[in-house]
Length: 79
Image (tube, rainbow, N blue to C red; front, side, top):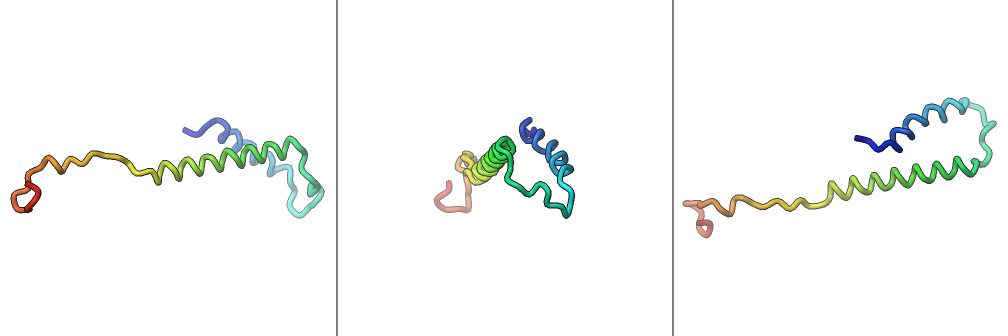
């Protein structure tokens, strides 16, 4: 299940996109400090999620091999 912060960010994206009209540059000035802080926080959260997913997928899984208990008749050294 997705964290509530990610869901909130996804819900706020259409609201932010609706405030920008295509082709106009009336809002091209510098970002306000709260908006910049939210964007940096969202970027940090998404970056950490990507790092966590890569770490979990790249981490080797330690599973005990069950084949060592088997007796192989036709394989020298295994039984």
